[in-house]
Length: 218
Image (cartoon, rainbow, N blue to C red; front, side, top):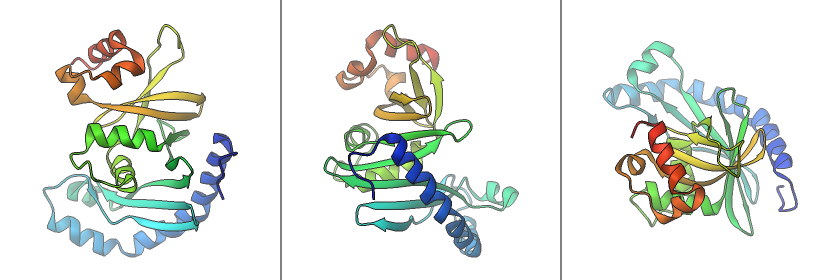
């Protein structure tokens, strides 16, 4: 069980343990049903990044290990013959829903997501403001949890990094070299259009956001 007194390192270790225990069995389950996934992909040949129904393992009353099978589309499946997965550990405490997932170039960075971050993500990325946080989290995992860190030094944070995703940028706090905390999110569209809202400005400042736009050639 995850309790509030645990450190991020403790929670990351629990995540690793749960993943090691459950992911191989869930992968076998997905592989056994690959014909079902194949039929769906064949029926949607012109679509890309197709996500299937989430698989959930209840660890305890407030902790869930969740796996989302997906494919980059029919052409990718024909070439690789695999269904990929995005997975995460969801846990609930007095401050709401939280989650941890892993990514980065070497899959060795733990990204922690808080209820506050999910509020910002729903506000900036999702059109349906009535979505429950658990559904917001699932959308984030599907669309933006495949992150790549980049160095983005600031005057008061020379070791600062940002996490770039397919649709935008995650502003983070660095807890340890391998543990990151997601603070807020801004879409590439907003950067491109110069829609620098107050919440984003407060994270790293207007000058740095303008520099970020230059980095992406927006």
